[in-house]
Length: 186
Ligand code: GRF
Image 1 (tube, rainbow, N blue to C red):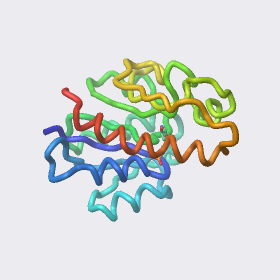
Image 2 (image 1 turned 90 degrees about the vertical axis):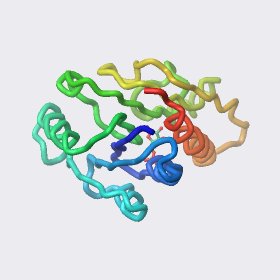
Image 3 (image 1 turned 60 degrees about the vertical axis):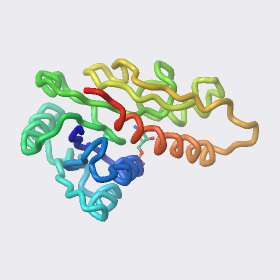
Image 4 (image 1 turned 135 degrees about the vertical axis):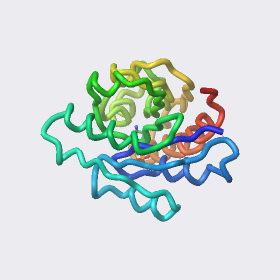
């Protein structure tokens, strides 16, 4: 059974599903959550589920390195096997990767298509077949780490709106991410 810590910055719907899928620590145990933003919705989602949230608020740090040092110090307070990024909107410096850590991320496209920010919007606008989701290991290169699983979503229907598309992607993420975390062998 692996111990995981969830890092997030925003809405926290993936965080919520990951916590809800932690059924009595059979496959994994959520030992904590860290937010990079003190006012995001995910904080309440975690706390409502009994997972205390630490905040390392990015606006309090003068540069990326200072934030990464503070985040690394905060992580030292936890005993964990795996870091799970769930909408963690930070680009990390080399410093963060000098320590040996296993980190996974979820991204709303079939990588390597649409790396980086606004991936969902860009994939929607493109109308290519690379819509879907990817779960991958995190390295210092943005969205470049080894892919663990991709799930294509299929073509958009002609009349689908962006919000409908986003909803389908999120449902896929919510089903897939907890399963992948549960099945990961570290
Ligand atoms: C997800 O779409 C994920 O793919 C991306 O950020 C979004 C986070 O959503 N990395 P939420 O905060 O889990 O609702």
